[in-house]
Length: 81
Image (tube, rainbow, N blue to C red; front, side):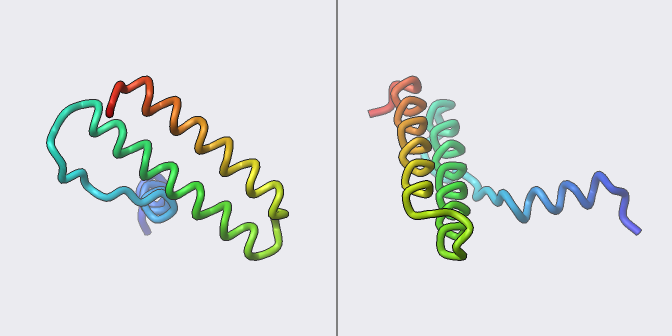
């Protein structure tokens, strides 16, 4: 039997997958990529909850809009583009 920490690590990897960054290495690009992957994963979860009827379309929109605003603030603070 695997230790519990290994099981939790595997569960986190399954629930929050991250792809390696292949672009030009700069710390702010790496952080932006991580933020983009997290944004994408959260939007995917919200969409799934709305599709299954657990969230209303209005609540889904509010949550995704809030995530988008947070993502834009993060991008602006990294001074990219």
